[in-house]
Amino acid sequence: MKITNQVIGMKLILTIAAIALFSIANSSAQTLYKATNATVSFFSKTPIEDIDGKSETATTLVNIETKDIAFMIQNNSFKFPNKLMQEHFNEKYMESEKYPASSFRGNIQEDINLKAIGTYKVNVKGKLNIHGIIQERIITGTIIVNEGSIVLESDFKVKNSDHKIEIPSLVVTKIADELDVNVKAILFPKK
Image (cartoon, rainbow, N blue to C red):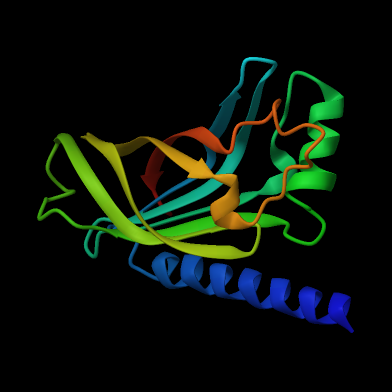
């Protein structure tokens, strides 16, 4: 019964994330920018071992009228220098079969014009969903509006404990509780 409820819960979370992406995507083409190859990487540094994973397949949407932003990434798309790290990440920590995707949906808090070329420091208030745990967050970043594209960049931290990602006591000295996360996306008008 527990597994069935978990599967139903995960399907509900994925459905909500898909609806969020669809609601942003339902905007007119002039206001919606999209990337399907955004880069998301994370780094864990400890005295014993460094761990870094990277994915280049995150879907990102920005509505320049409403200033809504959405990211969604398949957890099993992260690649590691070591195959064993990748296996442990998916099976033991992220439980990618149970929690296949991570997402963020938020709104830019500053009063900026995303139609005007320029570089903007922003705070995006929204909900970060990792490992089935949703956290309210304000994530800082930079938006660069160019002629015909928008670049999003952000560096922030995520605590494993905030998302109930359990680190076994045998390896707790090898994996930091707080990970450095880097996001970069180059978005183009959605056609």
